[in-house]
Image (cartoon, rainbow, N blue to C red; front, side, top):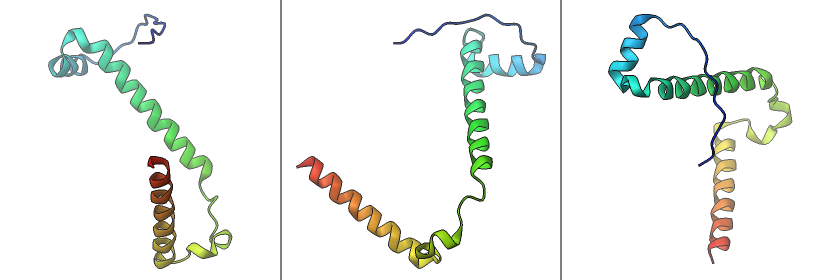
Length: 92
């Protein structure tokens, strides 16, 4: 288990929120719960930023082989078959 450095901080929460957290996870697990919630929220923010940064980079003219649902299904089928073949070769 990797130990990470910790820092004490002062954060102000509404009483109702602290009571709800304590009721759900217990007062002794409050910090762990808040840390996990903050990590989840940061991942959500990073994901949203990545989506915004890459919005519009897919151009249909760059992928004429994937214009229709049928084209996409064919592409996915071929990709899955190749992956299955690779897995089979690796497991032999």
